[in-house]
Length: 238
Image (cartoon, rainbow, N blue to C red; front, side):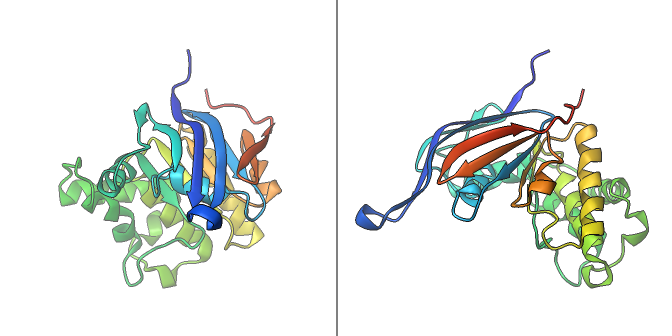
């Protein structure tokens, strides 16, 4: 059975500034990512990987070209429409966790439900789902802990649970192990493998080749272009 395309970009460009002081961060990006894939985007500083991540995450619009997310062309949507798409279809995991201080792990996980226009979950249902997500990431015993009471690895687990709460079609992980020691980093990668094995589509931005090797393929950017695609030999989720 043919896999569904979650991401398709067609000649995506992104130009900052105007005229003589304009800089082309992306110069015609064409990539496809299917459902159930685990893909890394890599590149040196200035390669355009962060700019591409912002477009894939509906955090900014391309200057030209098309971005089709889950069969919908989102290239020309305005900020309000993009925010709706982000909340409905995407989950984010950031290097710095981005958790609310003085707020329990459970509350942090269920926050996206407050902004979901489609969610008809009552408070109790949302809380039950939040608990299920924390159980999934191995933090059933830390639900009422605040971020300062958790290790870095545990905080990242909370962030991953939050990314999954709205059943996104795609999880975008930006340097998810960047703030962690090697042991915690391995644990987070093992968790991402587990989620991928359960059918989650993941795009991970990283500068670390060893972390990128965990994925099925690595899209390497150089100077705003796709320079190379490396197949890492990991089996696709069946």
